[in-house]
Each structure stands twice: as C-alpha cells, then as structure tokens.
Image (cartoon, rainbow, N blue to C red; front, side, top):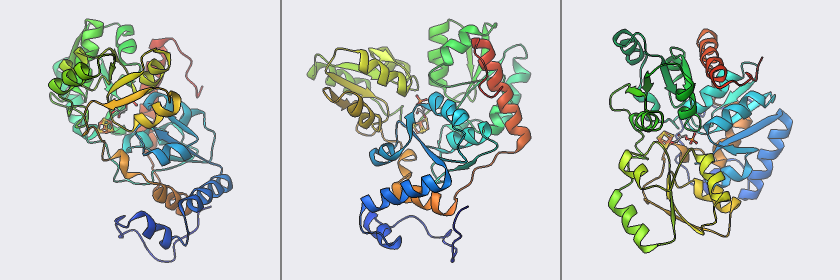
Length: 338
Ligand code: 13P
Ligand code: SF4
C-alpha cells in the first residue's frame, strides 16, 4: 500500500526549509507537491482532515476543516481506507478509536497538545475515590487511556449541553480548569477540576488590558473567545464558543471587525468564510506551536510512506467508544456506528 523507504529516515529531524524539502522529494514547486499529495490521496483512497488551527496551506488541501467535534464525526463517517489527521496527537488518536478498520496517519507525532498530557489515569481514579457519586466527564483533549476511564467525553462545542443533561449536581471534569469553570458558570453545577491546574498554554496568553485597549481602538469590533480562556477574558467576550461555533457566529453576525480570542490559524478559515470582515488577533502570541508542526511536506511524506500510523489498544478503544455512546445517549442522539 505504501512505498517503503530504502534508507531509514526516521532519525532525521524535520529541520530543512521548504525549498530544501522540495529538493529532497525531487519536486520543483509547492504546486508540484500539492498535485503529488492529490495523486497519493486518490491512489490510497485517503482523506485529509484538518483542524481550524492548521497552517493555511494545510487547510486548503484538506477534504474537511473543522473543530474537534466535527472532525470526530467526519472520522466516524469517512469510510476511507486511510485518514491523514492534520491536528495534534489526541485528535489523531480519537480518529483511530473511531475507525478501527482504517489506517490513521499522524504526519508529525511530535505535534502534541500539552494540555492533554496534564491529566492522568491516577487523577481520574483519585477523584472517583474522593467523590464516588460524581460522574467523570473528560474533555476530548485527553489521552485515550484517560478517556477509557470516563463516563462521558465532551468537546468545547457540547460540554455545557452534556453536563446540563447529566443527572448529577456535582461533576468531575478534566483536564482544563478554565473550561471546567465555564461549564460550572453555564450550568450552575459544581464542577471539580482534575488536575487542579490543567490549562491550555495558548488560551492563557490573552491579556485583559490588551483586549480592553483593542476594544477602545476598534470601537465597533466584536470580541469572540474560546471557552479555554480564563474567566476574565471570557467575561469581556461578546461570544464564547468552540472554533466552529465561532465560524458560524461570524457568518451570522453583521459586524465587520472581529477581535479573535483563540489560536490565530482560525483567521484563515474566517477569511475564506467572510472575506468582507477584518480580523484582529487579541494576542499575537496566540499560536499553537504544536498545531503548526504539520506541514504539506510532512503530509506528503506521511501518505507516501504510511507514517506515522496511530493505533490504540482495542480494549481501550472499546471503553472510549462506550463513553462516547453514553454521551450521545444523554444528548438523545443516535450513535453513528450502530
Ligand atoms: P475546538 O474543539 O473548539 O476546535 O478546540 C480544540 C482545541 O484544541 C482548542 O484549543
Ligand atoms: Fe492543545 Fe491549546 Fe494547542 Fe488546543 S490550542 S491543541 S488545547 S495547546
């Protein structure tokens, strides 16, 4: 299925520049690279799924661009033999859990979400012992081994809705303490964060004073923020939602200037959806270095050599699917794989 390497390139770090990679691959331009990716995609019956934070050129060659919830659903429905996941580790792992019969490839295994690695199985077990009556709700930004211990699995797009629907007044939630706080704010329930201090290093880079200043300069602007932002930042937002909920909001909003309270990769998506508006990053440091590790060159390499294949132990995958099934049930939805 995939061409084998004559030499082992694994130890080589991806430190070459764009033009040098084209030379390594024997190509003359980026257009050449893009058409080779399309050819390989067709030959392998592959699909490329990309998160809204991906580099613009990666978003442009993807078959589908979306938030964590949409990408999970697409992964379930894809039916493709090969899924190339342009996102961070937990997203590719989630696609593997939902597609045991497909080959899931993560073009850069070093693209890891630091927040996802802040939660451990021990955190879940300790919390269960301490609060035996509280259900465990785990954010999709977590490793599969942790999700396998959860009662419910949520994304930023449905966390509030799911917690509202669960029949319990006290919930254990991890790993993002800011999303835990947001859920508590919106549902009025007690949300116990595990670990105590889990956070996204990107969404905690926004500063209240900078946003206030930007709002005073761009008087007609609308500030949109991700629920992973701390409470003071969410408090001055005109809209709080997942990345795709932001896209929907911008499309339905009459404003022509938006301050962006999430990773700046989303601006490319927004410009494609609503090119008539202006988008101003609420922080120039809101860049997820891990998401940006996926490049066209790595996607090509991944398709050509079947690297790097993501696999999840089948008993873990089974338990994760059970927790997803519970989540669908509590929302009153059909489980897509049944
Ligand atoms: P979304 O599900 O809103 O796309 O969020 C994923 C994520 O990693 C946010 O930092
Ligand atoms: Fe993880 Fe934050 Fe990057 Fe999202 S933006 S992938 S939560 S580090």
